[in-house]
Length: 91
Image: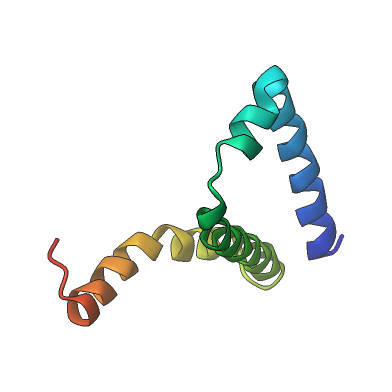
């Protein structure tokens, strides 16, 4: 099974669950509540998330589950460490 197949099956399952949860107010909650000026940033976030999921499934083909999950779970820590010198953020 390829990475694209895994992503497709995950998207279908997610869409079904979302449809069941939102049911009658789907259009109001998902489409009407989004402002037009927010569409570019939301589209960028969707693309980044899709790319991240693809990389995650692709990495599972070559590395063990524990190694991939360890790197994914360290992402917030790495973000904090990088934000300190680049942005001057404090923790």
